[in-house]
Amino acid sequence: MKILLFTDSLGAGGAQRQLVGLAVLLKKKGFEVKVCTYYDIDFYEQYLEDNGIMNEIIPHAVTFQKRIWAVRKYFKKENPNWVIAYQETPSLVACAAKMLGCKFHLIASERNTTQIISMNERIRFFLYKWVDAIVPNSYAQEKFLIQHYPWMKVKIKTITNFVDLDRFSYVKRVRHRVPLIVIVASIWESKNTLGLIEGLKLLKNRGINFKVSWYGISEKNSDYLAQCRSKIEEYDLQDYIELCKKTKVIEKKYAEADYFCLPSFFEGTPNVICEAISTGLPIICSDVCDNSIYVKDGINGFLFDPHHPESIAISLSKALALNDEQYRLFCMNSRQNAETLLNSDDFVDKYIKIINVK
Image 1 (cartoon, rainbow, N blue to C red):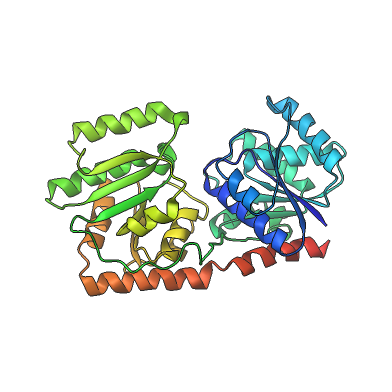
Image 2: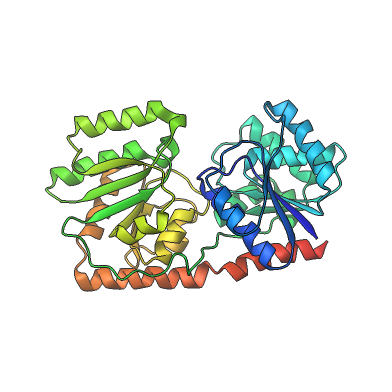
């Protein structure tokens, strides 16, 4: 059986990380697997090559209208049994290709929690009439879709993220004298970088010592990055927070950290939280979407309201105030959550169950 995994690019995002992981897991289960994208960004291409999987760039897909016809032509040539589309635009394009005569079964994977039903969302959700299964990666998105589009209920099969528990193994930690908080997320509005900076200002003014390393500089949003740097300078936080480029050695960054933080306004199921708890990091993050499934307040981390810097500061200060025994227990609880919730066999078997029904 031939399966195409389709997304926009192999950029450094969480959706792409799950897609390439799914490709490898399906190949190990004996399926013929290929990845296809329409933007030539190769952050994960080496990982695919190392596992014997090809990524092909679909040519002539430069505008949205041309993209639909280019993808339709490519799918007809490849003639897959199944297409698994990750992210909103690829899902929409795959639906359009199926409407235009391509014969394949289609899984549309929802990777975020919808905040506003814009015209793009209305079109995409209408086109989901042509999909065989809708796979949100969070229960928050499942709830949203059923609430607003009850007809989708029979098609929805929620599959949350997985983590390679061997790759992201448990790290025994001794905290740094100046605690290191790591964040791995793009620096832009939805990730709430400015909100975190406001919270850090409050911590600094209260005499609390810490260091934050945020890995996620993106050329796509240079204006927002400039605003963040300006606020850091205005609040004299240069010794407290460093904004860094995206990293391919993410395991090393988790291993170096004392805590992990994610201040986003919304998420689906964040890969980075799943990976961080797998390594045994205590988490300080927004109380949004499915985060509270992975982060139990006062057990392996602390939750906050991302709209209020005071809430961010309080949760950070609670984490930094843990004594050594409490800290050790938080670390162990994080790893235990990961082992319970993030098994890769469960993840791929749920996709295979959908595929085998047809």
